[in-house]
Length: 267
Image (tube, rainbow, N blue to C red):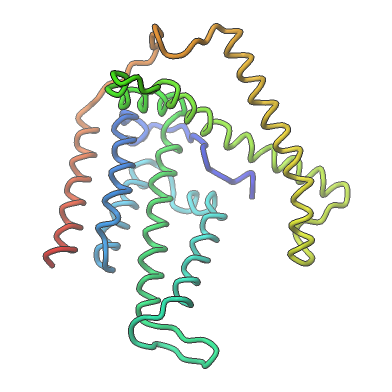
């Protein structure tokens, strides 16, 4: 499962989404996160889902690939769906087994929250899958540049986020190697009582944290040796260029916001 994780990974391709300006993609994702909360019924979520699937299709990445790489998140979404069904106590009773009662409002909330969570995960994953960490850093720093007037560390924050995204796949691979090494030595992490499984995770976390701190120290040393002193006076080899496709992408997002607002407040 660790080998198939797609968090923080970049998939090189030549799709229209890959060619978009990273600033446009960042604005797109942050705006979509806000807009999706306008949906409050099945039709609205259906439109949002079609929009998301169209974005995925234009990126050249298949939905099957996304789902296979987001299995832990899918499990969390399924768990959230079940919790909403069992614990919501509003509306008409749909099923009553004595020990278990399912309400109509519980089903509705489970559908809405799970769908919202799924669409958000797909869109945010699409950002990292179609944009290199360096491009994300440059785009985020460019968007935060106006805040430099109030001494906001835009470059440092962008660099920190880029490094975090870059090391997610590395830490996943490291976790997979440690798990395989401990399983080869007789450690069992997939069976037995929950208490024993938790105890088996402790020997996994210690070497993982040690290796993570060592990688961070090596990275800091390498940056100091190469003369890194922050963003002041730095020039850029890669220049960001805003094209018509970036404007059109944000325009389609405005249309989506208008449709969802109309369905929420006037329909």
